[in-house]
Image (cartoon, rainbow, N blue to C red; front, top):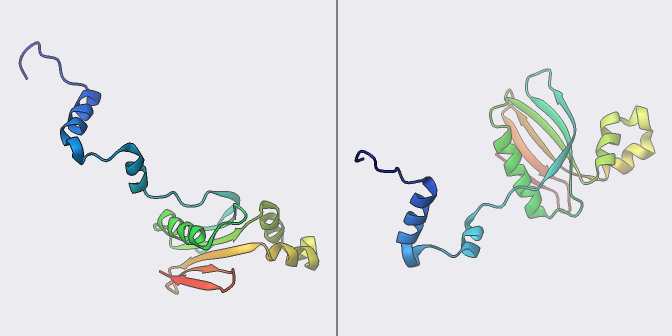
Length: 147
């Protein structure tokens, strides 16, 4: 660069690069379609360390999450916990149901426990020792995705 010359800003370089693409640049609306959809948002109700190493979680997702949304959540969990040897994630569509099941039937009673269990949508399990790595959706018909 010549002495005294200003270095171009990142913004001007980006404008130049996009401008030089001309008709090859996709309109902004089309670019949004190319971005990967984020996995379903979830709320962590409880998180514990597993004695075997790894994490155990109870999470809640939005009620009415579609099967495709559940699959996307399974993929997201798989990526999020890839470095952990063992993971158990219990997935509910109601935060209170997740808390109730986490508390256990002895604490809340069988009837409340069973009603809360009915709100469980899926389960993600990864076990390094047994090489089990699955995402189970409990909707009808039940489906198991093996990784």
